Length: 465
Image 1 (tube, rainbow, N blue to C red):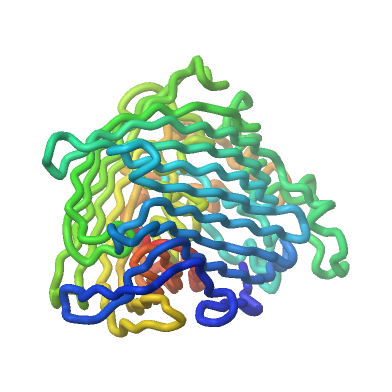
Image 2: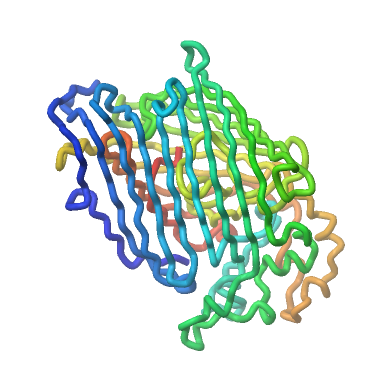
């Protein structure tokens, strides 16, 4: 589990700067005086973390917003963000994100590219609670300990996404189109590299002596041989958006909904068959005290309606906004906060997020308009279309399950027909700079130890939705 040793967050000091001529003010709807932002505005966000197995992480996130002459403020002309971090044992994150309504006149353009080599990527099996999670197996102080990285594998991913939205007449409806590319390389953990520099009592067991869950799924035939190493695929998407939000980055009022068809043709991939998924989102921001308190909620369904999606493509969530490093789940900071990332993987999933947002302090500092927003939230979701592994599991013998003679039983790994909703709850703080740059702190706890025995801590950019 990641342990945060310290965070270098220089929000209001020397790292907050901008090439801006703030020569005028505007009066907001609630009667406050606010600086009309112009020019370029920057927010760097350096940090350092530590993970027992991955090592020290050095990272930098940053956003740049172009307000130009300020005539459209609080809207912007262009926004870019960069996130980069490196662990001392090989994991890393690199991402560039761009958004503009003015690159192509009358069309919203969203683009991002990310390279994510992960030496310890999460894998908990398929179909939610049907795959049993045992926290003691990764607890090196437990008598049942197997490996701290029992539920991990190695993944390298290159992702390129582009989305375009344009208006339909003078209505709030918009058309949506885009193309995405994923190159996903899956492999067993590199234990020798992860053990480098460790004391003997902290070393991880070898793959041969204690295979992680990923290796066992391959051995049992739950991950086919032609899928085990991943592959590449291209996504073509088209859909319809309805948007009445009062602010895109930090909405307090309005509706934002979308329905998108996501096609992965087999001739643009290494897959034996292509797939077609439907992704539907309903987001509603209900004002309780105008501009200060609102209820925000998001409902989502995503499922396969034709073809076959390989296991390495089942974690991805597809939508119109590129809002962060990971578009994966269910579980993790972008879907079910507090639940282990990718804990809930199926052929079709539903999800709901409910969040109270309270804007409790608005002020100006260093010529920046700051809005401090507290939140409390409840997240829930489950699998509704199952990955087809039931027959394989039922035909496995106890001897095949216990192929390393560890005393394992089928019930240690599988509980068929056990899937139900996975719940979590928590709170957070969002710092919104000039209505568009958001620094987010969320803390969440899963209701059941089957979903996570610890506290989920998420520090990054953007609201969840």
